[in-house]
Image (cartoon, rainbow, N blue to C red; front, side, top):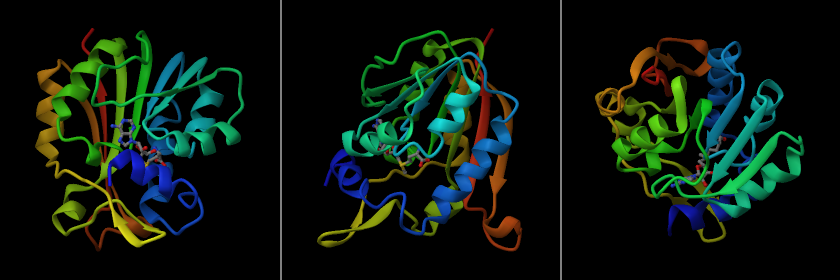
Length: 208
Ligand SMILES: C[S@@+](CC[C@H](N)C(=O)[O-])C[C@H]1O[C@@H](n2cnc3c(N)ncnc32)[C@H](O)[C@@H]1O
């Protein structure tokens, strides 16, 4: 099943089922970006709009893009603010999301993208000089242990196509596109440090 078809199925239950990864990412996003959102913002893989309303309240203009029409339909029903534009698009292709963004966010989508270099090259072009690129993904430690995006579909458990990314895959691809690494943080279940982190978050600064 393609990633697009998988999320089109998952859309009906994505917000309802227990999903600690989804919930922890919301905390990471709000904690890391609460004083950094302004101007024009591009949200990649906005999904069912978990972060969309929060980002829209803090930005002048928000473009929320996703490959899945069904995921985005849930977001469109939730977020009706006039400063939000929803677009359907694939981040692995040419970007038709616009340019001149102050901030780009990318929450829980890059495990489905093999070529991180493409994403950083497009993000560098879409951001203003000095703009901020936020990424939060399943921690590589979780991926090494076999975690992948999965859901209960009509025919049982569906596991989506995922790619392993090491920490240095992100940082090297970012630096190759001219980004500076501003922050790397790890996010743990229950706020504890006794177990491997669930998420890793990066803040990259576009070259001036
Ligand atoms: C795990 S969900 C995360 C949704 C939301 N960002 C959140 O944190 O709840 C991943 C989202 O990325 C989208 N996605 C996956 N691959 C994509 C691609 N190549 N281009 C655009 N969106 C993609 C999926 O359709 C889905 O909505």
